[in-house]
Amino acid sequence: MTAVPAPVTVVVGSDGFIGASLCRALERRRRPPQRLTRPRNAAEEHRYADTIGRADLVFWAAGTVTPKRAVSRPELVELDQRALAAALEACKLGARRPTVVLLGSGGTAYRPDVPSPVDETGPLGPDSVYGRAKLAQEQALREAADHLRPVVLRPSNVYGPGQRAEGGLGVVSHWLEAAAAQRPLQVFGDPATRRDYVYIDDVVAALLAVWDRHLDRDTREPLDGVVLNVGAGRPTSLAELLEVVTATVERPLTIRYADRRAFDRRDIWLDVKRASALLGWRPVTDLRTGVARTWAALTGPTR
Image (cartoon, rainbow, N blue to C red):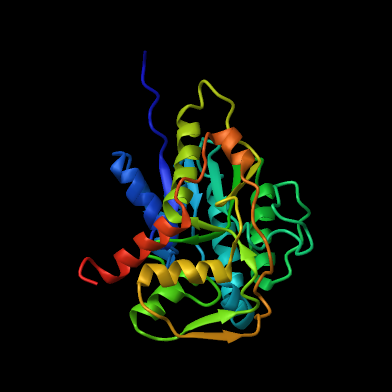
């Protein structure tokens, strides 16, 4: 039997948290992807377009916008949208019809009044600038479907080793970095608020499952126009998360409470049954294990 050649894979945002983790996973499989970051000049723009134009599979994990920055730096939202538009236009250059996998936002895409767990058929209606920006990217991807195969994965709150604590994202990384520096931990909003926290390895596993499905494209229907939630599939309150972090750090922590910020979502967790059915994927890392691994990576073996 003739082996199916591996797809030409491009990861845009290869220097980011999820993108870098995906690149390392593909390299461990001896299938190194083409790594791309946002071009900084005309020469880089040409190489950027040429690389994407030769791709079979593009993972779009790029972005400079966080929920906080989306409010205070609207120009970054526009830059992100323009970068994606350029990539989608570059997909027209090659003879292939590539699969483009966009990382959306399961935590912000759905209407705030939708009961959890919410599945992919839940009504959309983000109530933040960040959520609307992510949903606009999904729309741009769908509108380009005549020359590419759109796939959207909507992760929930991703955490894990290597995540930088940034405004409005990464409560686990924020709290662990604060604990390592012996600073107070900041809790915004009601500690009973429940959200969905998914470990980075589980998100990468879902992306690799899409990669595997593409590799098997001669014997199975390709993913085309699919939207999939990727999360832990269960709720964790801020109070419960705080208990896990405190137990992991193994010392008392100073906690400061503040009002909920405008961009903070209330209760939301995801139904991930569709990803399980289509990809054979499921989250396997429990919260205590994931937080412990993140803490160990942050503090080193001699903490």
